[in-house]
Length: 116
Length: 111
Image: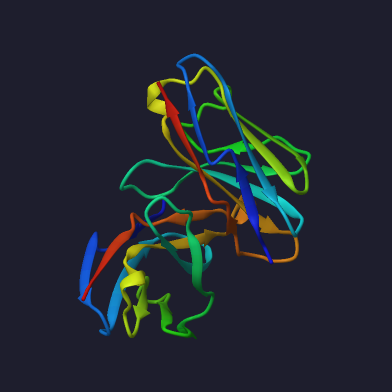
């Protein structure tokens, strides 16, 4: 149980275009979902926290107009990277917290974004 | 702010025991977690300490001492497949109970 999927697993896009990444909790309802970014050989950095039906809370330094997050249902959150630049190339990972637990997060497999 | 410090790399031989330490500076957290991440993969949850003391899960154990702002992950009977990055993380007592990760420790297991 507690499986989180992400789609796509890899994406290559051109500079200036937008890319949408989906995060789904497959067998549980997630009131809270988190989006992380991880550069090579570095740790996971939290970008934003989203609760179903409300606006996401972005971490300091993360541009909310560039990284659009939508958490439309208890099983789906999306991250849209708008007007992508090569420096946005990274590994994007989502996680979901089941409504019933207090602390545990289940991570998706990640999406490797390459902007050319 | 919050900060968690871990050694950057640890090397050990197959069958040995290795301890990965994590010291932290943070205010108000629910517990300390440990995650394993293989190259190109997502983090997988290993262990969680809400209270001081030792938690044992198979070959992995984790320890927390809030008074010392310190925790560790202990891996026993090391296997080659344990070669990965290991992250400690605290669950903060604030909006969303978000996780803050340490920089990670690369564990290399040699035969």
